[in-house]
Image (cartoon, rainbow, N blue to C red; front, side):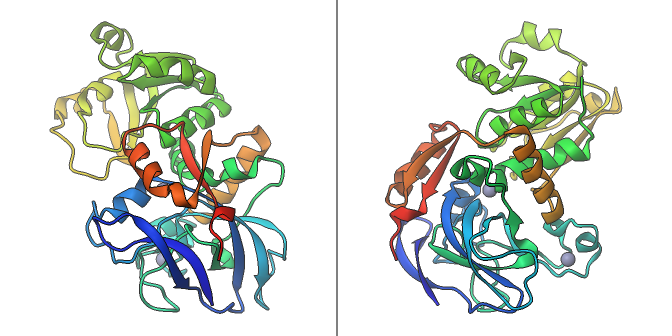
Length: 348
Ligand SMILES: [Zn+2]
Ligand SMILES: [Zn+2]
């Protein structure tokens, strides 16, 4: 089955229209008409081959919202017309210890990512949500509440779960002082979610002008990391820090902000980071950890939590044809806080 999409043909080329193949509906598959797809930093890194290994053409997009068009004979949890989501993964081995623990993102045999993985059925690379239709095993399809603003739900599928999962894993609770470093697609979700969990959220940023917005999103306070006096006042006071900065940066000042035994979790930077002073960790038994998206079960839990607490992403809508401008603006941090593509603009 053919469907319209947008793809990058090389690391240097802009995204352009393409027709791609989707598999025939299998017994356990859900066929989805895509309505919206968020534009994630990873889409850009992958299109530009920043992390290496991109197989072209690549159709990015892993913040997918759509309606069920058809279901396979053995599908039990979804029916035609239902509002659903697909995030960063579309398959995993289902047999390893990570999959057994509902942590498919850490599948020991390698989860099949929504784009850029080897397609287990068709061969070649999997293609993401910058397209009109997708066919996904029901185990990797999420139920989406009709209650929320549908288009603004799309970014929850990556930015939402990426920040929700560490907040849950490290047990962030009412009254905890939580720092969120970086106010972008991930950071703005981190502020909203930690606030909804009852934490006292402090936005930690290099740009004082982001302060007002951070407070609107739910931050109690704004800490400008370039202000040495302010940093001193907050030394040793944080129960948890969620670091969403997507580029290499000095972690040492943030380690200083942690309480004894507290943890800073990195969710943004996949690159080598500048030197870390051991003393900062040792004198206080502090920890730095990392976290990758969340499993399917936890992603459903996050969507349900957001429906209950009325949480969506702040989005700016674009047409598919605007994607190359949107990529440039994301790289310039010129979006509040997530672009979402209205897939009606891409006619098959
Ligand atoms: Zn993403
Ligand atoms: Zn597995």
